[in-house]
Image 1 (cartoon, rainbow, N blue to C red):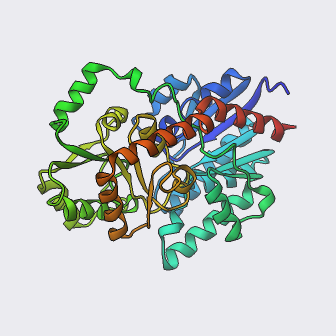
Image 2: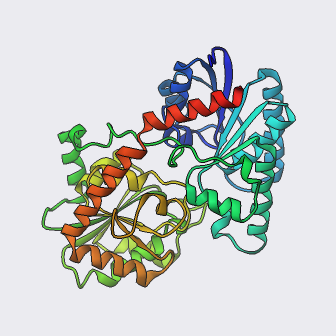
Image 3: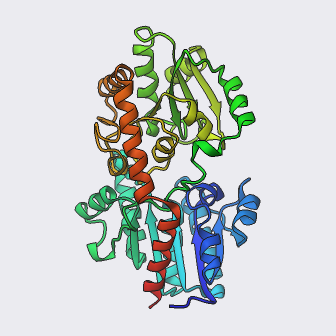
Length: 387
């Protein structure tokens, strides 16, 4: 099917999601005949995304928090835009963009309405907040014509909890929202000058063993357990360091004062803030530790494996689609300090075994999650929807 002049609107809550979660996807769809328009709230990454994707971007006043009045305003603005643009497909990504985007698209009679589920905040919520998040999720799915969980484990969770009918659900390929650029995460592409700068930044010494975390520095990512596990074993294992790469978010799910003080005061814990050069840290690290409490289909464990770094991850949706315990990495019980601690100690005591697992994981990722393949599969699904 030829899709020339078919309009595709891609919506995320903030532009950083366009930049990293679905990078290159809009440009790819544009090169395959779609007129692509991106939408999100404003942000520092907006101009860069517009340049990288070579597609128009329209700013929508979306927020990441629960803000009913602002959300209604964003819904009305988006509805009017969609009525004017008359797109053939609206495809949303991230929770807030999902509920506002799918509602507005249905109100505007957009024929194809797709929402990608890349993780569920409700998995770690309790009480009234969980009840509310469940209602929002069900409303999003009700307004969508298709719902794409980005992992098989997430598909199973949504289906078993009856958030929507199974015939709306679909996993693209083996999972992932966008695949991974296997050419970028390759040791052959490393720039020696950048590598040396990173080494200086963390005071790199090849005598040390480096544990690495990459992601948002918040409770939901398991940072509190990771820091405590590291503190519990650092005297037993000499010359180990914990490197935390990612932005500290004080307004959303902040760390406890205790954990924050340890991160700041313990010299063996190194923080870098946000970095666009994560593959260099992964190349230098001995272990990649990802104790997140909830995911959809995370990219960072795959990136680490492509850089030959062994992976330890929590046994949650998404992670279990990537890591097979003691075959392609280690899985530990989510939110369980002792389980995480034992996994790290096992990995430090068995480096040869961990390296073999890393090789297996790298082969699995290259075979199943190459970005070029995933984007072709998404294009094929778009064509099916339009037919």
